[in-house]
Amino acid sequence: MTTNGSPYAPHTGGETETMLAAVGVDDQEALFDIPEEVRFDDEYGIEQRGEREVRELVNRLLEGNDDLVEFLGRGHYDHYVPSMVEHLSARSEFLTSYTQYQPEIAQGFLQALFEYQSMLVELTGLPIANCSMYDAATALGEAGTLAVRVRETDGSRILVPEAIQSGRRGTLENYVAGHDVSVESYPLADGNVDLDALEEAVDDETLAVYAENPTVRGTVEEGLEAVGDLASEHDALFVLGSDPVALALLREPASVGADVVVGDAATLGLPAAYGMGLGLFACREDFLRQVPGRLVGVSEDADGRRAYTLTLQTREQHIRRERATSNICTNQAWVALRTAMHVAWLGPDGLLDLAEDSVVRARDLADRLDDLNGVIAPVHDRHHLREFVARTDQPAQAVATDLEDAGYAVHVVDDHEVQVCVTETTERHVDGFVEAFKEAAR
Image 1 (tube, one colour):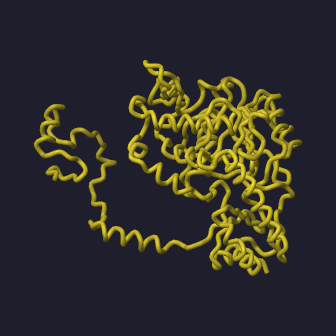
Image 2 (tube, rainbow, N blue to C red; image 1 turned 90 degrees about the horizontal axis):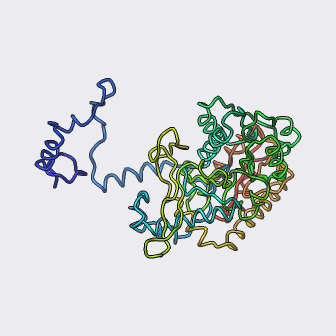
Image 3 (cartoon, one colour; image 1 turned 180 degrees about the vertical axis):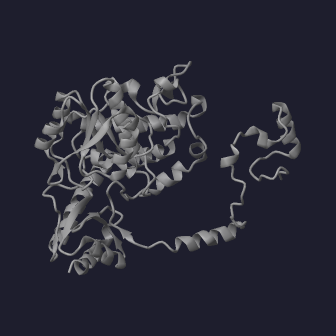
């Protein structure tokens, strides 16, 4: 039992006084220099409750959430996470290992991160993979600043598709704002890159060209090699956005000239959290010293045994600020561990099956919606992965509202367009969804 007023600090009053005396201050307040104008000296207004009361309060709050079947996508995908991932990742040696600075006591976690990097290398065909980053948006931002560093004196434009998640574009703009670099859009044609328009847009002032496969509208991009060629002709980086499920089926990024691959690796290992993610970042070996964050490597210990360690750390808390490539100062390692576990559980064949099923499910649901009066699905005459856009004669918001009343959620993307995503977790609800869509589209 503590006597210093904090249930989280296991020190008696005497121990606290001894430590304060050792550093030469009278009280704990003297350890902090907080200006008066920003000090908080009011009450928090949080009523003290016991565990049972807190659980009841939280349950009441959660009961206010709409209980909807989510046919939502656009970057957040609800793939089934096996219970093995939940149980193994909850082992204490993983949960308590915040970061792996002491390799002698973190070999298991370091090996898991090395395996995660190796999986990304196999999926992308690029030899360097970061062991963990925040999310897809910050990974794209880091790719933008990498492009600035690679072309220190040339180029001031980064080109992105006109259809891109606003959060990803906004984060990229924030990252490059201090470098006098602009982010500009290039057009799409039937959901994919308009190669003629992109050819006109790319010039010697272009730092990087960003494309996605699949796109934010679910289409499979068919012109990636041409995009890579256009970027290469002007010494611009070709940055490709994707995810591990898509990478198992679609063309290997290295084979189409991608210099950097970014995206969200948390499509596996995590349920859809609409905010929580895991940034995927892989690149060519030329950029080894420009990779943000850290890399796990493998070597041998003094006895000749295989050993893992943090080989490269380029964030500013580790090296001089002027030499740092990133200010990422947290650790997504536990999330990367979960993704690695999920990929290992699926195996190469299982991962490919999941990707192929994601194409088939989207195609079949689009065909069923297309049979309804007042609906055209998909809008784009392309192959799709997981999701697609459907056009409705009725206003899209009205359709979405009626679907919500029936217990289903979709994205509204335009006045007469909704976007629908289907995965193995929502597949059993498809029949009811189609019936509700039929009523909503009348």
